[in-house]
Image (tube, rainbow, N blue to C red; front, side, top):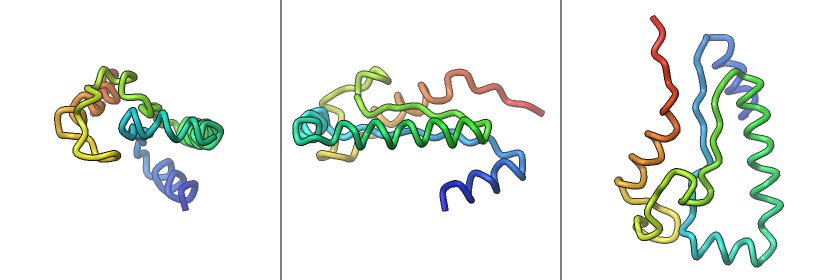
Length: 100
């Protein structure tokens, strides 16, 4: 479904901005210890390839430092607080140029 979605976007001149959101740093550390690193890597590679091929932008924000977020800015282990969300979206769109 993902690639079909991207094709629809491409066919309709819709630029896709996608990102991998961060889990809480302690959860990420534990997941990496349990061997999830290759899963994160392959998922990010797939998203970067497919979004890039569709002419979109993909950013890996798995680590909260990647968007200058606050490690304490989480509601729980996976849900970020609005302040972190705003930092992440601003970083994602920092090079956005509106076209007429």
